[in-house]
Length: 427
Ligand code: IMP
Image (cartoon, rainbow, N blue to C red):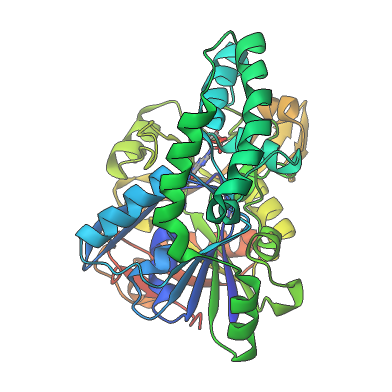
């Protein structure tokens, strides 16, 4: 088993940072393959507590090469901030590589993300306002600027000239906003280029070589499956694919090289931003989960919407990712609850359905059908073995495993690395 993809299986924030931090210790290469600094991967380890947005969570693993893949959109100023912060804490970033094909977030992307959200008003997506959507839109519209172009100032100026002229028309005529100065953007991005140049490389060759040496490669997903622009709750989605398949495209390796796909699920659900979430709790229990688990966004600080585990959503996630194993996180958050619910199906217009509809309008009409269980009401945070968990916690996990139809590898019972139960070995 040499290549594993780690995927967020719900609406993001499942705890991928911790899982990747743990598995990266056993990997030689870690590649972030999608999203941008909209992601926030919380990692707590002997170096301290970090909220990583762009740098792969494998950066703490000495000797692991960490690649920001072509599928990521990079805000250079945020990346530089993150590198400085890591350096300050004594973490070496020498092993970082940035794909020369990765697209850059530009000042107009940030402006347009905010302006468009405001224009949409009641229909807003609730984006992180990090310029992600506009940057991916430019990538497919062939208007993007890639990291490799930072290495050639002449090319950069020429491309910027053409693009900023166009963006200024949109900014002024559509949104009545102020114009951007070509010279200012150019000078700023030249500085970024000088700082990031040592890291920018062609990465497919590096990955092919790692594969030929049978090295362990970990592809690190961002966001979650239900935010995928094809399969998520469109249009309330992000703009790049967080799916296992996105791992091939966003890292630059073929599907035949993937050996395993790990789905990371919280044992309940959370979501930030707008859009349907059938099991959302608007009551005391929802607030209790939010406060107990400190469910506030790593990137934006927004309170996360909390709800019960949603099996129809989980089954969609399994179908489109093909998980070979699961990491179930935040079991300890449920320790205090006297009763638990799992949504096993929905009632939609009088009918019981067990799939996750593609239409947002239908999802909004879905009423969860719940199975209820007693809680275990005892702390699990110190437990290291599955059979030492309270029997009711074991039953809960086994039921999730049955509903998702996939075996569990890891259970997380706290934020520290050692608060992890390895039910089955991953690597
Ligand atoms: P964007 O990716 O900033 O365009 O935001 C689109 C949607 O994805 C919004 O609902 C965001 O809240 C959500 N989103 C983006 N990144 C994350 C993440 O890392 N975790 C959870 N939700 C996210």
